[in-house]
Amino acid sequence: MNRLAPIPGRRRLRAAGLIATVTAVLATYLVATTGGAAAAEISLSQGKPVTVSSTENGGTPGSAAVDGNAGTRWSSAFSDPQWIRIDLGSSQAVTRIFLDWEGAYARNFQLQSSADGNTWSTFHTTTNHTGADQSITVNVTTRYVRLYATARATQWGVSLWEFQVFGQSSGGGGGGPIVRVSEFLADCPFTHRLPDDPIVFPGLPGGSHMHDFMGNTSTNAFSTYTSLAAAGTNCNPIEDLSSYWVPTMYVDNVAVAPTGTTFYYLGEGVRDDIIAQIQSLPVGLRIVAGNAQATSGDQSIARWSCLHHNEIPPGKDFVNCPAGSMLESYLDFPQCWDGVNLDSANHKSHMAYPVANACPSSHPVPVPKLRQVLRYPVTGDPARIRLSSGRGYTMHGDFFNAWPAAEMDRRVRDCIRPIIKCGANGRP
Image (tube, rainbow, N blue to C red; front, top):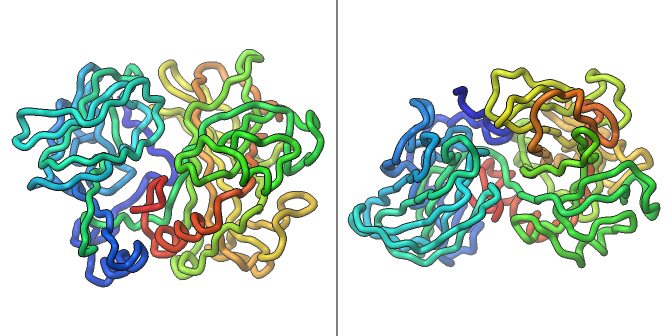
């Protein structure tokens, strides 16, 4: 079987020296940005010895789950149970575990601790997991940490991009190596479906084609920044009150919601010196990406591919995914702002894409690039599939920014500008 295709934004090349200890200068910077003398969270698992129950093939070893490279992964054989064990080297106070799941995730699993690697105690249990990445707060002191998966969610094995174990250091010294990727993310599942669009058709309920909404649970035709900021969200992190929406997908004229919904905020697309100048997305900013009126793939920036099957070429229109796969959609939003307007008459001219890895003079303010990654439980003949806006090349995305300013500022400061890969919590 071919290796699962990494999600764009997660396929990363290691920088030279990624496996070296973080330099004193970088360590000092990280302490300063996480509260001075306060205890700083560090990685206890980066590069540590790993033992696994099995591997899918030679390209998916257990060590790939602790290498700090979110473009490599561990994947097991296609059976239950399966496990992966990390040796922290000595007894450590563990405060958090982050699980960056690949599409072949575990539905039921336990997190276990051991002093000798033989006798195990369970300190966390997850049942009926849906596949979203997990940041699990714990309080356990142990040398060995094991993820013991009792039930797979798919026909494939159990697969993790990263299995990260964190602890606290009062001195703020470095843990594992920092991953030099300018990124933070939010996982925001499907919430509801309405023929509304508060950006293009504000105040006109039913005025749009059908949309699937993610993130903020209140979004409708009357939504404003004020209403979104006062409402709830299903995002991880819960601080992200933004609303994201896309045209509804239909298969044989039956609506199908995405089951994988990740939104990456990236610095890539501009030079490193410009990344260092990136500004936060202003509260209330509205951005539309893609072309709902496209009549061919030449007019589209959307891309479709198949999970588990990177031998199938991606396309601007729907692709034919084999049984057991999923249909994936990728869409990048513009990352250059005019510095003045939160929206514009055509909902696009206040934003622009970089030119030659820099923002054009008409849109001089670089902001994080939003990358929308959606997975649909859809396979087979593309002729059966349509969007409420038309064929696959009409795929588009809408974003209404309701991140609290302080949370966005922290992530831009600590993750985007210094080119550090952060998780949903906005920390390395």
